[in-house]
Length: 237
Ligand code: DC
Image (cartoon, rainbow, N blue to C red):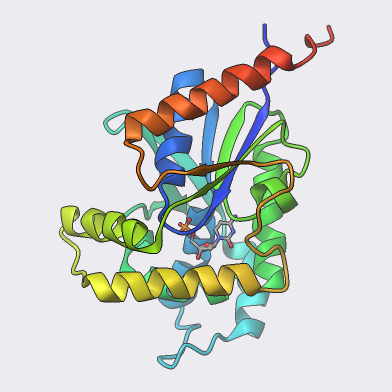
């Protein structure tokens, strides 16, 4: 049997990373982990427990003390054929994708104790390889030894349009300018934070998918996977 590798897919907000990553994982029989969903769960937990004031101030002392209460898991949904996100065994897939969570998630994801807890959970999930994980720091901090690293990007406007269409399709209220502003602000915070900022790993392959269709980017990624697994030494017995 071929050795199962680790695949890290990083990039800017709403650039279609998760669609690519999910499609690839399904195609090659790997586990898909959406690390952004884990930071979204931490944000939902903070909102549900009134740890974020209306002015955005975070009660960091209480959140840090309560971090052990945050357990994120993923369960395969046979209907959508994609994994759903659970926070402490409660299905939160829709609740973590609202604009309210999106507008608070970057400051939460910048907190070192939140990153430490989520990174440890992610590394435990990927210990055996055979995983496709997407996020901001997967190829740089979570799995620096990943065999295949991809850095995805697309123009701001195209990314905002995709996100806006997604929210409208789900029947959630959305304003294009708000979505664009939120996405730029998240990119700014994600790229400038002190711990594990969004950065392209030196050994990552770059994909600008501004003008690619979903099937085209899927094809591109499968070719990169095949190239990589072809060049790997055979697994030791
Ligand atoms: O991919 P996403 O939009 O669902 O990610 C939500 C937020 O989580 C995003 O603003 C940055 C943060 N994030 C992170 O800091 N590190 C990751 N590995 C994944 C996401």
